[in-house]
Length: 209
Image 1 (cartoon, helix red, strand yellow):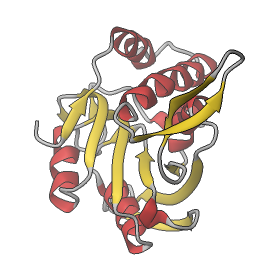
Image 2 (cartoon, rainbow, N blue to C red):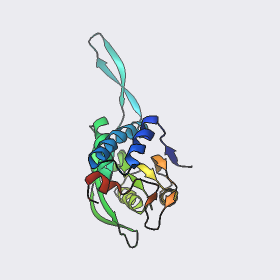
Image 3 (cartoon, rainbow, N blue to C red):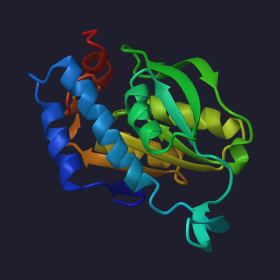
Image 4 (cartoon, rainbow, N blue to C red):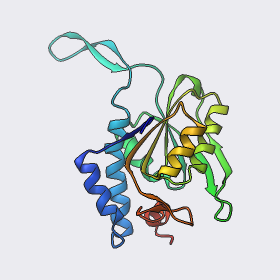
């Protein structure tokens, strides 16, 4: 699928299967989400630009590779996005963090914004937007629009599960933003949930169902 990368690492697929099981506990779901997010972060950042720096090892002075440019930004779509954020920050602890509050109106399925906070110089940073589910795409589309309004130009979107409908809507709205996901599921049901999916990621992560 154009503009979409499915991360099919065996550990990602295995952990995702356990997360899908309805009997997986809140604690287990939260732990697995943190673990899988680290693996997904590894894949979405594998082509970051590098530059060379002069360093002293205990034996000699060498030229060694380091990340180039300003620090990354992980933009979490509240609240479920924070589940992915935790594991990603373990891998890239120097990353800046943006929080974007949008929720889906259960009647209209449209995104409603209630919070936005981001670091400076978004135009000079790679922004990785994170949300476990790309269902209708409305919340993700709105979040990326807010980032672009603040100057962001280099954006990627990372999710755990995606529905074909959500991918279509997102790509139509933001064809310049590449999607990374662990799996593309069958479809959305009449309530806008991904099928077969794993339920509501936020409820399962925080035990609020």
